[in-house]
Image 1 (cartoon, helix red, strand yellow):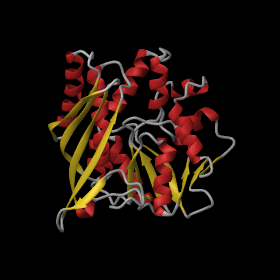
Image 2 (cartoon, rainbow, N blue to C red):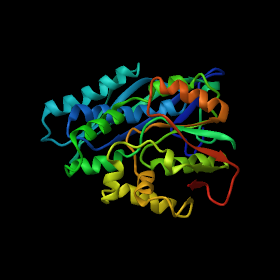
Image 3 (cartoon, rainbow, N blue to C red):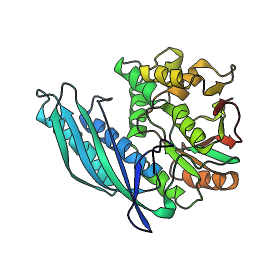
Length: 304
């Protein structure tokens, strides 16, 4: 894989049947609990391998920490990452740490896939439907939680979503003729969808009323609790996206919202999409069909 289409991970052909998938990600804490922070950072890093159609096998820790950070906090961060890697069926094989003013944690992940099972974000075809496997709103809710504006229940729901691996979604979609896949992270739904649409040479039409949302995400967006990354995403996509003026501003803010450890966005034919959705619903009830692929128009993304 080259750099042409902003794929989620690097892919290296080992032989005629097997490919190696390599990815790396880290970020500063987004929750107070160090164990949950480690879990979320690990789930986020592992996600790129699932998005490429692979299975993670080996992970290495990347850790930055201030000198005055208690050792038990560092231990809990690493334990959270270890447990999530173990859940993925992979192993942690050491890593690297350095002292820094702000804690940062993540993983370098190696996975494998059969050559014919590799997925890219540039294979979507007109007529495909799009399935999203996790609800949106983590960036907004994380921002609101820092100010104590959301309920404990909502905060726990958002954390549970971020902690959840895309492993199940990845396993289920292996049984279907998926044309394209990506995961939704820092560029938000519209940013990652733009990469898929531009790479595939198609237009993506989203149904704004079909979006799965985390509890209170709309309420917080209506209050203007929007992370800076959402404004950066909107500015970058301003000339590349058409949004129907009737679409509520709070909802469009959620579509630009940078996600942490978000779901997979999966493109496949209409007939197969409904079969896949039914299969996913048994394990991931929040999965929904949110749009379709149409022939190229003036804009790469259309939101109605």
